[in-house]
Image 1 (spheres, rainbow, N blue to C red):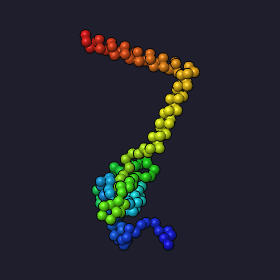
Image 2 (cartoon, one colour; image 1 turned 180 degrees about the vertical axis):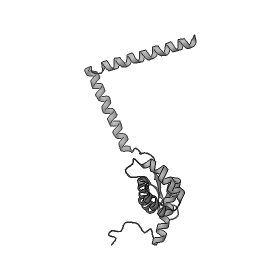
Image 3 (cartoon, rainbow, N blue to C red; image 1 turned 120 degrees about the vertical axis):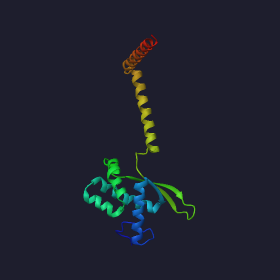
Length: 176
């Protein structure tokens, strides 16, 4: 039974497993995006998020712990300066795993692991936005029917007319 076992073995002994994760985390922070198998990607996400959390703390102990794992001073410097500022206000979820399908040789499921830049909108949120837009339009239509928006629309018209007058006067001064 695998009770209380945290990480995946990835079919390798402990030293090889740690070396693979070190190299993948280093490359992820160096390039921002890497392609690997799904099992390695899930394990990489766990370790990379811990390293970014260490960087967010920013103290000497955290820097030493990161150096003990990553072992490349330039990458740790980048982690504690650029990436720290980027994710300081984010409460987790610093990496994204995207499945890209089976590999040609052995049909192993491949995935892209990338550092999160901004939030991705999903189809569900687009539908919600469209529904909200329709509801707002319906409410405005009803307000127009009851005569509650006439004043606002007349104010908009007067603002447009004043803008047009200003642009016409500017054109006259330019032509003179």
